[in-house]
Image (tube, rainbow, N blue to C red; front, side, top):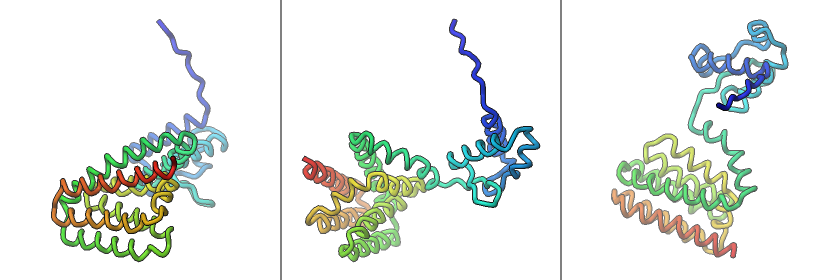
Length: 235
């Protein structure tokens, strides 16, 4: 029988656990302020260092936000906030292990094919009009490549919104942010702008016709072409 030794815990971890219990139970709800540092010190019988370390850990986890001169406040959870919490780690991973980019592209393809299928099934006439507006904004941004990239993301994010799942738009935006260098090399390739717009129009047409299989094919062709272009540029 293997017996694990009992780990000694630091005081801030105890404070952290007790604060988390109060937050998870709803005693301190989203948007509410935590007690002051002095109150926490008195309630838990610990010093200021333990309280501050616990609060900083909560802030790093995205559970509370700390503003200078104010008590820590429990963050109102959103999909964007959840994705933002892993953004720094994702970018660091891509820098340290560039081969991870292939996994990211595979994940994006899997996700966007599912989203565009849902969009084709659910799109209303107003949704199609918004997609056409995104396409017009995208074309107008051709004079500014930085804006062209942002409008490219906005187009894909609009499809994610139409799919009906509020988490999807946040994921799409995050993927663009994590692999921005990869997308820049594709968008800025000579002649890529017109090709991108043409492929986007095929996707819009399929969504407008509620042609789910056609929308999936158009999106697959678009994303696969982008990956092929990236590989050719980096041979």
